[in-house]
Structure formats: structure tokens, C-alpha cells
Amino acid sequence: MRMTFRWYGEGNDTVTPAQIRQIPGVEGLVWSLHDMPAGEDWPEERIQRTVKQIRDAGFHPEVVESVNVHEDIKLGLPTRERYIENYKRTIEKLGRAGVKVICYNFMPVFDWMRTDLFKELEDGSTALFFEKSKIDGVDPFELVKLISGDRSLTMPGWEPERLARLEELFEAYKGVTEEDLWRNLEYFLQEIIPVAERSGIRMAIHPDDPPWSVFGLPRIITSQANLRRFLKLHDSPANGITLCSGSLGANPENDIAAMAREFAGRIPFTHIRNVRVYDNGDFIETSHRTQDGSVDIAGVVQALHETGFDGYCRPDHGRHLWGEQCRPGYGLYDRALGIMYLWGVWDSLGRRKLQGEVSA
Ligand code: DNO
Image 1 (cartoon, helix red, strand yellow):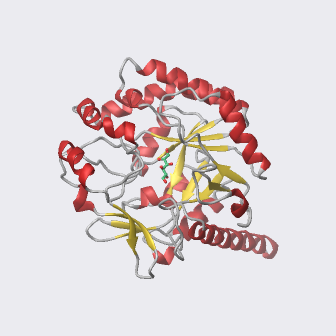
Image 2 (cartoon, protein in one colour):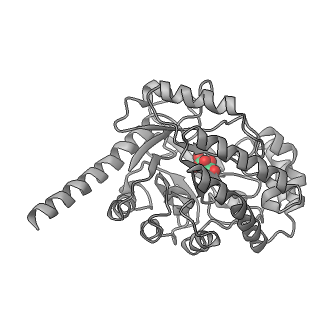
Image 3 (tube, rainbow, N blue to C red):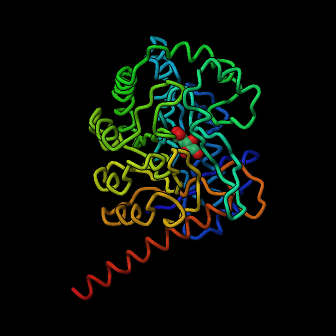
């Protein structure tokens, strides 16, 4: 398990590489050019500059999260060709810069979605929260009006340029079914996976968060069965998944450890974090520890260990602790604690295995 840590870049993150260096066992910074709009061809010079900065700070730059997919590709519009070409050029450049894994998602319009970014937990820390009733049954066009009034509905997919196009995007997705989305995803994979293969890069799709349809928009990367279908769309080691325990874990029917076992070999990247799911379907993010949430994190790590996982891993969203001011979910402290929990489980499994071999 190769430990990494997400870093949003200088001036864009409250956490510094110097702080990250003091977390045991972190070898790489997961990065992106966060200001590049989806669909752009990333400039070589910017890639090289960021990669150098990361290497100079003592880390490897082998994982990029994310290269975002333009909506026209998800919608299957004729204009997608141009954006797919740009995507291919970007893959090639990242390959030349030493990148090994690209994480991306195929969620229409939005990325991850929560209704409260700073909901207080019983221990006084705060965390990201999803209140189902706030979103269920909301008419997307009503929503456009709603967001301008309700600042608690903040989401990363809601960059100003996307907001401006929100109404138009909902219109464009009218009538787009899950099957359409599957077809458009397959087309995209057919185009980009051979380029990834040639570039020494493994693509790792991120599950939808939450893993169900929101505002009537189709979502397909949601379950074990759908991940199975996804991997079959293009049967290549370069076509893989980001196993995100928190995203998938928001649906209690998802067994993440079983997924780790079934999809072993096709998981170049994992995001590990816990969520507590309530009976009414709401969920809140918690510490990484198994006992604190609904996902058996120790069981997921065990499944990865048993299947010889040697891909990249990062702790994911944490709580905001000890009064820290940070990007929602991306503080220093809880993710550092999370890493130590993951190492604790991982190392003790390694020790048990060793002892088993000695006594056998
Ligand atoms: C949230 C992340 C997601 C993820 C993208 C991958 O913190 O897990 O935003 O980066 O969905 O494309």
C-alpha cells in the first residue's frame, strides 16, 4: 500500500507539504491543476512546474486527481470529439511527467454533494453531512433558484462557471438515461484507454458520491454490480477504479471489502474513510476508525492486504478538529490520524502473516 495525501497546491490549501512530510509513511502528493476547466488540454509547462515543486518537496507526483471530463462527453454530443482529443493529449503529457494513475469521475453536472459542510458531531468536531430530505424530490429548476439563497448548499461541482450553466445543463440532461450514460462512458473509454496504456497510466474512475441519482440526474458508478459492468466495458488493466470506501459506503448495501476482493488487480487507487449512515438515509463523515462509522474500515484494509494490494492509497475527508480552519474535509489532523489508523491495521496484518508463516 503506497500512502499518499491530497494537496491542492500552493495558495490553494491550508496544509503544506512540510506538514505532510511529518505524517509517517506518506510518499506522494495527489495533485491536479485545479484551475483548469474540464475539457482543456493541460499546458506542458504547468504540469512540469507542479511536478517539480512536488519532487522538490520530497514527494512523488504519480497520482493525479482529477482530470475532469467535459459534460459534452458525458452527454455524448458531437462536440465531445474535441474534448476527448484534449483529454488524450493531457494523458500523454502526464505520462511523460511520470504520472502513473489518473483519477476521474463520470458524474453528470456535479461532483460530490453534501448539504452541510460543517455539521457538529457529538465530540465537538465538525464534518461533512448529507441530509437526504433536503435534496430528494427537489425540482432541479427550483434548485437553481434555491442555491442563490441557501449558502449551506455548497458543493465542489458548483464553480461559478458551472453555476451559470446549471439551468442549461439540466435542460441538456433531460431524457438522458442511465443506459445513455453507460454508452457515452464506453465510447470515452474506447478512445482514451489505448492512449493511457501507451502512456504507462492507469485510469481509475471514482464512484459517484452519494452513490445514487440526485436531482433526477443519472448516476451509474454506484454499486458492486455496476463496477463489474464498468470493468467489462473495456477489459484492460489501464481501465480501473478508485475504490472509495466513503462514497460507496453511503449506501449500506455496498460491501466495500467484497469489492476489494472481487476487483483486486483493477484497483490502482483507494480512498479510505468512514461514514455513519442513519436509518433515514442521511449520512455524516466520521473518524476513519471502524467503530465510529458504518463502514468496516479495518475489514476493507484487511481485504486489500489479503489480496496483495500494492496500489496507491490516501486517507479521505476527515473531520475538522481542534478549531482548524481548512478546506471542508481536507484538514491536516483527522487525515493524519486516519493514516495512522490505516497503518496500524496494515502493519498488524503484516505481522500476523509473518508469524503465521513462521509457525506454519
Ligand atoms: C472529494 C473527492 C472527489 C473526487 C472526484 C474524483 O473530496 O473524493 O471530488 O476527487 O470525484 O474525480
